[in-house]
Length: 318
Image (cartoon, rainbow, N blue to C red; front, side, top):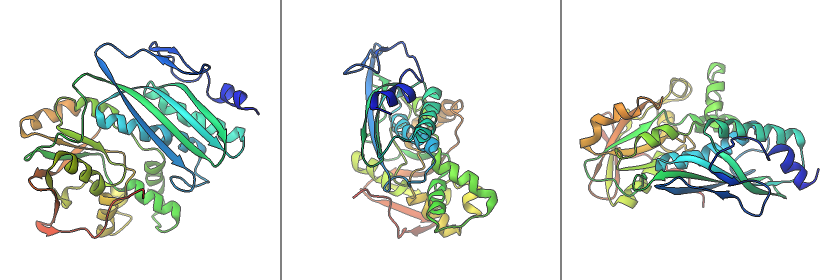
């Protein structure tokens, strides 16, 4: 199968037909028309076989996750998903793998009304590079740099499940059969908190998505905002599957540093705390207060009311 046959069969004329796409796949560039009064948010992620996913990862899950991690970046900015481009490097043309991959990709793309408008395919080690574009009303974007002393720190969902799912795949952690499917799905099929991110516009003072672990990602907000934080480790939300699969210490380590949860971490001024419940009621996601922004530039942890310092760090690419 030639390159253009591959594109025609698995990617062209699939997914969303958005009115704001003037020209999609098939020309040298795509042409899109942003809505009046909105700015464009752009995010790009690269997934490399052997680095970000195992060679035997189900293609459907890989297609889904390739877009989900980008959507999570848009969610952290409060953006509305719109268009994406896909650059795909493959060692060979495997039609069943391509069918499964594209089905997973378009399953989540259709759910969030994302149109594929272009990209590239080439021969080489398996690598997925996806760029997504979203739209945000002018002046309404969430950033990492807005946290202030006294703001409250929240996270959505539960933390640590994806990392435990990964360790199951690596063969370094065994869990009871009744928890396997949930934990693997949390790793393979993360839920980007797109609606929650949009609901936080005008309420949250800062936000970030949890891709590298709470410890690492919170530090990005603190550095950008020139503040410190106090985190109550007892308040970190943990699923029953995680708590029933590992020790309490291991569960906390997974939650604080495991990464790939793709939940949101955000800060809220005291004046807006009462509005958060109402704002997030339609997003379908639970959230919990885990700490507060303070002066300084460090993170302090408490556990059972006592100072606590984790001996582990979040994921770093280099």
